Image 1: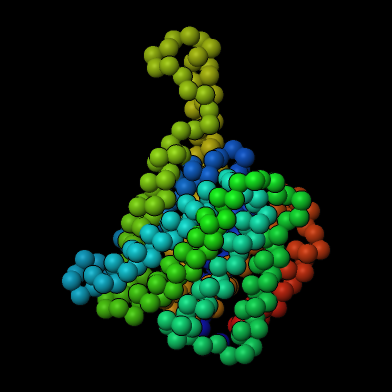
Image 2 (image 1 turned 180 degrees about the horizontal axis):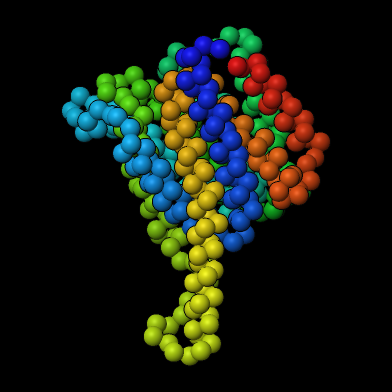
Length: 311
């Protein structure tokens, strides 16, 4: 396999596993941590990963006038990405998770279309077949019959569609940004950090600062109050650990995606990284002891066949 292929394929596969494990652990603890707090923990993890990567790697002057266009375009891409996450989290609170999850899994489709129109990316026939198999596989894995809730509120529909479109635009813009002067994945980490705080950070700080535990009056010396305070502190610590671990994996996956898009065609990188539900389903079956249905087995087979065709 050519070295140029390995340059994007290795971080792409790593991202797929990181996203899959992150979703698996988030699924394990989702009843204990609210979506807004997941957003807050997510941006904290992104900050640690992004600034650490920037600090330990060589990079051009991030605020040099010549490279300002790259930084601004990448920042805008991550503002769109963060906004999409906020819309997604709000949509799953309002709508049936089965439909919302299935719809969000389709974001590689508009990404491929935008990449063809604006970036001129063209794949061969077999790769298009592979992309189609991966896309249908992702839709199949996201579909969980009987899990959705009935609701008369249709407000989730524009939110879910908006998230799908924004993710597609963000990844296309990110690929475009690498054609600009002084483009560097290290500088891109600053955009990942800044765009995340402008969106996920704001949402998390507004709605996710408070833990689900009971609040106590300050200065209380009542033994029952002290016991409750101690229990609440322990609960907050557990919540922090249980949320930060999957969000840390997700943030590392974001870093891998940033590198993958630099070296590989976004038309291929996006559907491959979107196949992370394969890892999540295996994790859920082995660790969470969830039952895997025939539709999901078929979807996994389609994704694996599609990945073979693409690579």
